[in-house]
Length: 330
Image (tube, rainbow, N blue to C red; front, side, top):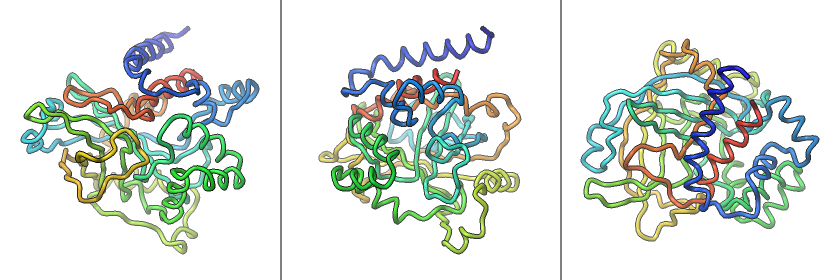
């Protein structure tokens, strides 16, 4: 076994120990192995072993790049999160499409952004999508959704007829146009976290990334003129001339807002706090950690002091599911 393999396994052990604290929060009849099988479309031993051979994964089509995070110093007036006292923090970013097909077309509407913000002593990871609407509020519904969508139109229709949350998701995606760039797409953390205030109170909130250059979508005519692979080249070419920038906000919940169900949207008039800016400029793209970041885990419950996970079962299942998927790709 190589030294690198030992290092990877050591990281898995560390992540596993972190996730044990939250395993009681994702009660489900399904195991993590079954959940990952549903996502990968590997329902039996033969397909599972075939998937391991090709290192099957979700968000298979993607690429990594780099930049930094510039916290908003005024955030200290509201929240007690020492991590954000730093002036500039390295960012590793992975942009991707959904699904297990590494050759998926960029002409679909889904856009995904995962970030690692690595501070001096602590880290903060994000796993986000361009849809604020999630399709399942618990792991059993998540499992059912993944199984049914892989059955094609018949399975999708079953979800529409039997699962209101899945129907709301399909209705949203149906009217969502493809963005012209990863840089011109907003991204949402559909799960809730708990933030510590300056008064030592706890307030629930959700992450929102808004593109500084605004949202730019493609018409069907524009889309038809593009190749199936345009997003990676567009972003990497763009950041050679000017960085891609997002303003990061925390959208705060109010008393009656549902915290632990990612399918429930909060009203638009909820207070938002500006956390800072994500600046993607490719400045460290030649580093090995950036070039291999697609092989790592973006762990959304690896959090700095002052931020803790909510009891959302989807959120608390992410780390063990990512670990299971990661192990299969070793």
